[in-house]
Length: 296
Image (cartoon, rainbow, N blue to C red; front, side, top):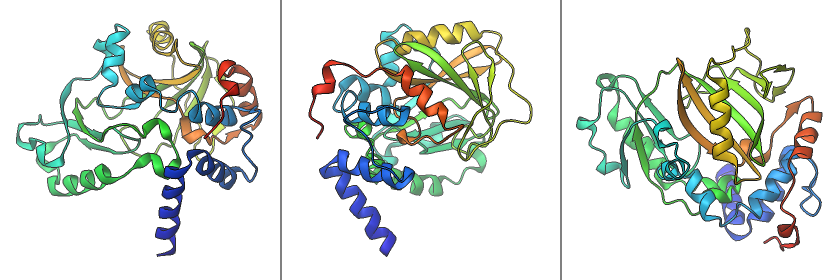
């Protein structure tokens, strides 16, 4: 009961003041106050962007909405990167389970981690899937983490092509349209817990660093044969943002779009060594004009 009340209180604070909620969450994670007046490291600057540049921003809302981000890719001439879309639904009851292909992926569009992977429909527990989706559709994800970029996303369910579950995910950290770091997720895509993550600089030189809660793969992932094409795609998709992480799949040389992430790890990244967060903060220059805005 106590935990429930704490969660409800946190959501209420997010609804009233995303800034205050962000400050509380930041302090809880790092044991220090969040510096929003003169942010220095990567986490602080990401939180500042969240509360300023990316707050009530129609383009950001479009890009984080998994049911509509394809419109942004179409604008950039990259619609062909999207996995095949089977349908977008406003209610669980609207999903035509009998008409779906044998394999598919289901995701809710208004946050992260709300995925159901179905490699074989004949063994899918449809009723259990419906219950899970119903819970997610009622969940105001943004309030739990004060991630205001999701606040204005209308809750929907996306059903799309299921790519190979063994597929690697390449996540490019782009600063002012320039990809500078990529991490490769070697396991755990499609909603499963991540374990292996390896960081590389943009020239594919392995970086000796780890993200808290993860470890490097026993064997470093190999550079994709069409890596240069992936870089070009990330440059195209990131050019209008101070920061965005462009997530791509690469399946035997065929590149697929995964998502655009503006607040990675909720702006609460813990890296080893800690100096990484300071270095990335130096790469991220905040918009000068917006520095004078009064945070709400």
